[in-house]
Image (cartoon, rainbow, N blue to C red):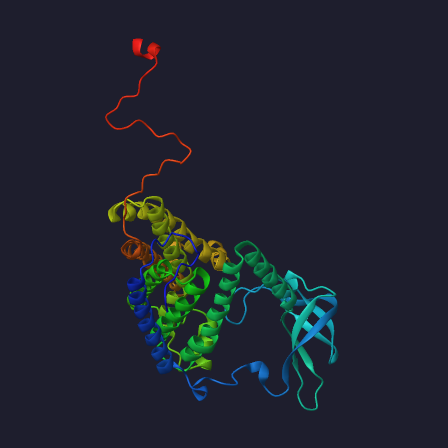
Length: 423
């Protein structure tokens, strides 16, 4: 992989073919190591749990339907359920529906009925058709395919319209990320491979492709890649230690317990640490690319500045970026866990008591580990970028314009007007 000027500008300075070849060799070694890791951890199809979906049982299917009417139904909901947890008080609902399989009726519980299912809504239902019995229906979910597709198209159009080719290549990078996750990493987890090495191999492969796709092949991008890999290694090491130190088992919710039953080979403890690596990729990528670009821009603006001056200036930018990125991590968790946070306030328990539960502690540790990797990636990337950026050089003095009259010769004083001489 050769390094060229990604934008056709002079930010990269004069060509440095020897450095480009050395860096290409290092990147090539990393790519080969990723390929070997993929070969080692690639799961065979018979190791991956199959046919575990309860909705694929004989006579059971998920179909699309349209609500024709919804009527309140008194069902005595409220109080405590069989598991001791409070139930939603209120009326249930009787829902009539029509589908390609004919008409049917289902009962909504009070919680779902309270949110509202109205005539004309497009829903998905579980159709259970036993031999010799009339089919029965259960509510599964709303049909969201069209809104999700339209939102994705709007996002893609805006990204391409604003960022142009860079935006298009970034979208291709998203597709590559999803491909690696769904075809390699997640199947390897299910097959019982050690999740943390799998996450490191998969994440490194994603960064190799995504960074060069989105930002071009250049020495500057390679500096960002090396900084990202450094932050990735720190996140993985600290995540593995923090997971054991905090006694995170990976069984913090009902979904975790179902996964343990469906895929008994999965190391849920290791999945917690692997999730920390994957979750930190986006912010790491953002920070390292910004730091590398800052160093190159500073070098272009101050070609005669020393490496120490460039590093100091870039770190001032990096400190601001660290502050905003740490907020991003916290806000992202607060937004995704809003229901849990509301429940904490409703229970009127202390924040410390709730934070030490498995479900919340996983997110807290994940956020803190990601923040540690992010913070340390900034000076690492800055050091690497300063070392790889063009060397300091003196500013060339501008030559006089051909139409500009020459200045006075050295050692010869220009005659001043008599008035100014008298002054």
